[in-house]
Structures are given as structure tokens and as C-alpha cells.
Length: 89
Length: 113
Picture 1 (cartoon, each protein chain N blue to C red):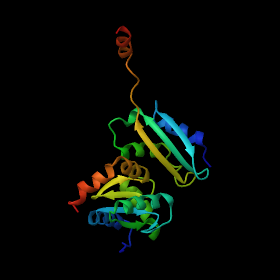
Picture 2 (cartoon, chains in turn red, orange):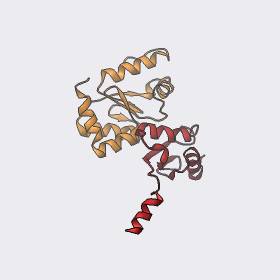
Picture 3 (tube, each protein chain N blue to C red):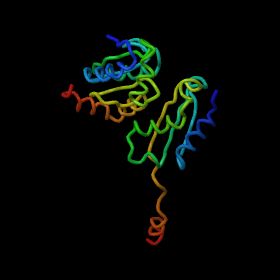
Picture 4 (cartoon, one colour):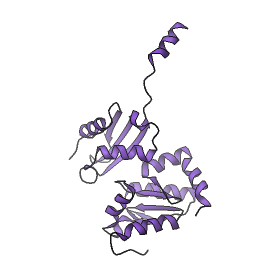
């Protein structure tokens, strides 16, 4: 049996800097994850999902019956100079 | 549907499946008889769009699942192919359906097959 926390940690370790939300639906072996990661930039949805699947390699199928995914590239934080120029205006 | 007898032949069969059918779905269960909610949802989308598709159930032979996972580098089912190309699983197809990208891809690949 795998916990929500374990799934979240696995994804965060594989994708440093990612914003990860994990939950379950229809029982405790159907997981859903929303992952916003800087590593997804320029990648297709298929590639993005493959990266998350790789993070939970070995869990899917046995401990995890399903992993519904919603992935998005994470925009980098606004550059400091941008807010500074805004202040000056 | 014909089935190869040896595992190495499955790759050839997959290539044939997706080449000969505009929309091809590897699912849990047969067409109109999905045995999994995700496979059911994907088939429903193509039904609603009025787009014909062929299905091969991964339960029809124990060799299909491992061969398919190796073929697409994708661990889950259903797996959807359009115009001979791997599109993704249930989440991606639902997302593309909602954004209209799925309908676009179907139109764009129509003449090719």
C-alpha cells in the first residue's frame, strides 16, 4: 500500500522545484496528481506524463491502480528587475 | 481480430493496427464493452464525436500488456493512437477533447488514412 505522501515525495524528488498536489479518488489505490514543474517547459503532454510515471516507477499496477495526471509547465518566478521597474513607475 | 502467436510479433501487429485504423485504442475490454472506467470514458469521447475507431483489448492475450508498454514507453491503459501516432492516455485525450485539440488532430489526420 502506498500513501499520498509517498507519491508526492517521489514526484517532488524526481522533479525538483515542482508544485505537486496528490489525492485519491474511488478508493485509496486510485491516485490523481496535479504537477506543475519547470522541467516540463517545451515538452509535449506525452513527455510530461512520462516524466511523472518515471517518478513513480514500480508503484503503478500493484500498489497504485491508477494515476490520473494533470501536468503544466511551471513558469519561472518573476525576475526581480521586473518588480523593481514596476516600483519605479 | 487476428493475433500473432509470439511476443516479438506484437510490435509488428501494433504497427499494423495503428496504420490501418485512423483511431486505434488499446483498452481494457472490447469496443462497447469497456471493463475499466478510463477505457470507457475514452471510447465515449469518440462515440460523441461520431468518429469511428478500432479497439484491441489488452485482456485478449497476456502478452499484449508488456509488449505494448515497451512499444509506447507508457505504463497505463488505455492508449490512444490517431493517424498512426501515439497521442497518450485517458487524461491527455480528455484534455485535448475539452480544448478542441482532439477534434483538430482528427480532422488533420483524416485524409492520411
